[in-house]
Image (cartoon, rainbow over all chains, first blue to last red; front, side, top):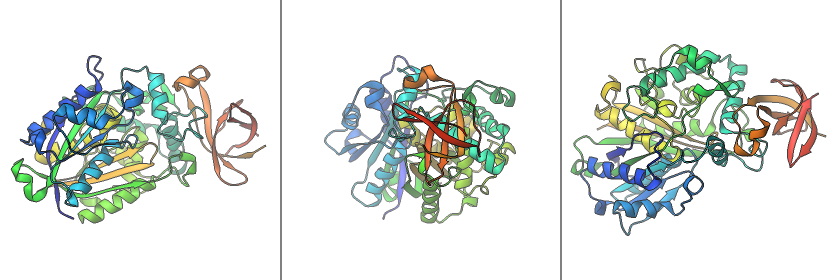
Length: 386
Length: 68
């Protein structure tokens, strides 16, 4: 396998954009990415689109060539990857395999979702399609309710507290307020976070990520060619995608995600680093409990101690190991199919030292964890400065 | 009828389209006495982790359990 680098990134702002359609968002991110890499569409040899539910949200299928041709990328393989909320993380993984294997040199990933044209109850119904529709979803579950059941169990087994969950929301909103592209740039207090309206007990409104529109794009190239495109290449040091049961009730222990643990172990091994060495991370905080569990599964902290770890400020912007300096899915927003690619963009911004007001001091080695559903797909990527 | 112990539970306030009229309602993952786990709707009294529950009825293919 050859070393691979990210040579370009581009993303739209995340938010609710009544006047924007799916394709215009994807094209904006893709064009910004090509400009960022000083590349033209004709150079792109393979194209991946990460998208969860375009057919349901906006009634459009065959999305990969629908987007790639609008970008002026013609004739090459154009492939859509669907892996629930890990769609563009998985697209990034598959793009990486093509470059690493030497099949192609320049491969582009665009992640996109257009969600806000549907009312909330309809959005919940569409998102429920990422669970097991013959079992857990048939009884009226939502993704919030699945993660609420994880939170209940985590509280029961480890003593995790309501305020631990809320602190994750508080610190991600604090970071998001500094991100000009974030959906919600609003600082919140612990009291606000603890006392908002219930969604699925024990989770309330501030434990949940946002329903957003947005797109993000990444361009990959062999490391040996990276400087043709950028003066600041960022190397993909380790990457892995793992899978697990779709239904939560099939998992032996719902306080941990085996797919996250496995993907983490494989990515650490490939990168030749230990969890302790990771300086910062973008973790999949679709719900506050998910970030807490991820810090445990990825070895940042001992099993069961993720709540106190977050509450002590260790993962805040000024903490020892900042998590979600972008604001995370919680504040930056969660246009489902765009999230994995956006996490890579946010790691690259930090590593290049281009993160503006939210730039952290130690930023040479970062990790992204993109989770699909209630843990059936996970992609872990470790990126580092060259 | 099936019975078991509540492994975890939640009360759903924000429901998907098809269940909006039922909210708030409780769901649980039940560790069945015969082995395996099942996601169910809970009717009657609210239940907590460790409570004993038994199947009361099945409507539209949805298993409804009650506190035993």
